[in-house]
Length: 284
Image (tube, rainbow, N blue to C red; front, side, top):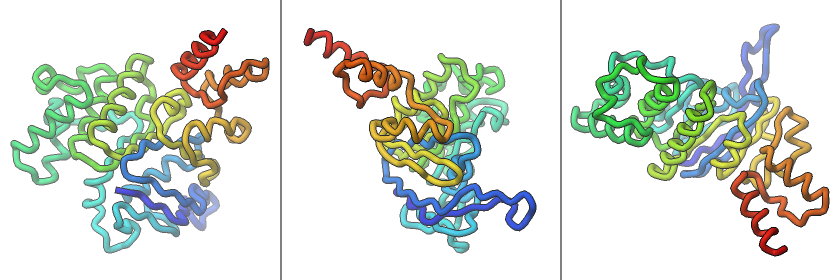
């Protein structure tokens, strides 16, 4: 389930006074099973890019190949592609509509034409993966839940479709720290259990540092940086020039190195910083 994006360009309201180029000749390859973080300032093209990956938007030019299928080809059945590519928008709880949690999560699998037994298995599996006990929550209304729990139900609805690629657009937006950590933990579990390709759009450098195998940085419709967190977060000047930052602990490490401490510059999580500081102290 690789994704190959070739020379992708998208222009909103082309030919009008409000014309805006949202994507500008983007070239990206995402390999099967990768955990990708997509970052960039507001208006950089992140949301436009992810909406092309399952065919919600059509490019003005360029090509997107998902699992060896060119989804920009007019003959392609996009419903088939959308079964493979699940997209969770910002504030997905606003998409909840059924009277019970079980029915809401089952809505997608039902549309696949599965048997009742297969649907039930998918619902149970998806609820378990997002940390919602089936017997306790199945008959509850999704509107009785907390914000974080609603978010889990919405994600479970997409997971129950068993996509090979899961795209999440700011899945922790508006949540308190506890809810944010719970959702991120479940996303990490999903990646590990299902071996699916995950694309996470986020503004939190700390979250990106903890979760992603690889980071794509968007600016003015272009992908300007592409690499492992250890590579991208060393590009502090470039990131700051486009309105982004690096994790706070990376700034701390930078200051310590400037003060003469022999500490690795390959640190971007608190856990890495703790281990490195303990290593230094043990040498003293």
